[in-house]
Length: 90
Image: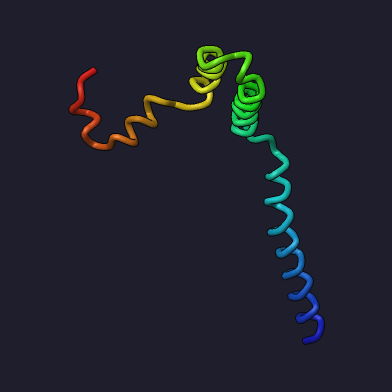
């Protein structure tokens, strides 16, 4: 009986360890979204740091390609507008 109890405790500990270790191992895998957000963040921060030199047009020109690469703007607008999106004309 004691051996069964030890076996069950050991088995439970192994499963607990596996349950904790599996998400940690998965977290080490590179997430493609991280690089995309970091690129956007870097461009935004650089734009803010050089705001006076760039001016409004310069900041727009610097951020436009990064915003378009990071966000799916047509899809975001479609979701924000809702069902009436399909009835709208271009």
